[in-house]
Amino acid sequence: MVRAGFLFLLLMACSCNYFKPEQKPESIARVGKSYLYKSDIAKLVPAGTSKQDSILMVRDFIDRWASQKLLIDAAERNLSETKKTEFNALIRQYKVDLYTKAYIDEVVKNTVDTVVSQDELKKYYNENKENFKTTGTLVRMRFINLAKDNPRFTTISNKFFDYNKKDKKFWETYALQFKSFALNDSVWIDMSQVYVKLPVINPGNRDEYIRAGKKIQIQDNNDVYLIKVTNVIDKNQISPFEYIKPTLKEVILNKRKLELIKKFEKEITDDAIKNKDYEIYK
Image (cartoon, rainbow, N blue to C red):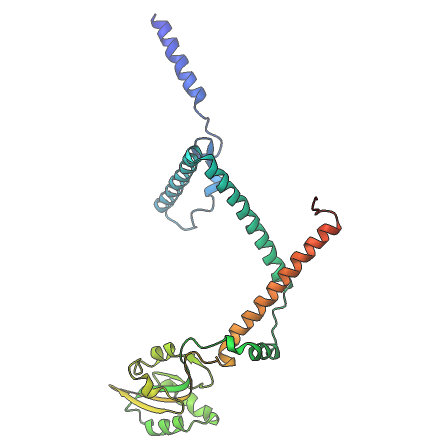
């Protein structure tokens, strides 16, 4: 009897091992019939990571992998057939969208002309300027922030307000003495940038200072701000060409891309019909 009992236990142990999934070579974890292999985590840990951190990263990855596998298995068992059919259709469509978009993007990248001439930009601007209204106030201005006790303050102030581009050497010499400055008043900037660059101007006093042709000298503690506003464009006005030039280029390029995609789709369909790869059965 003892011998028979021992044989029974041995057979039970063997049968349990028989039904237990065998660990596959190079595998590091298993969930059901899915295995995670060493190759799956080969590039997981960055070079130079400590042993302790490496272990934590790998364990965290394995735990997340197992959780996802368990969840997807549970979902496949418990979701209705209607839901699964719906999701599988979405998955198939997503694959189609992903592949075709990647392919078309590659075709466009290698085909579309990205050079937009100045004449083309101006032509598009003149034909569509009503579509490019300002969303806020735009300003052209120059300014200097310097210490009020600067020994050349009067000279600097006079040259600033009577600005002459021929004084380039003068400004290069004294620029290092300024706490901040911007002398290029040919560039349009948004009013929000003015508030950042010039803390002495705020929404409360902007109407007093931000006017075309306005010359301003504001003392702030030991600093003095010299400001000359050359031009102002208010909200909902036509944006100046130079300000929206980058936007115009993007719009034209996107237009070219859409036209190219439309042409490409037509050509690939026409070729398929010609080669009898595409037929509609009546």
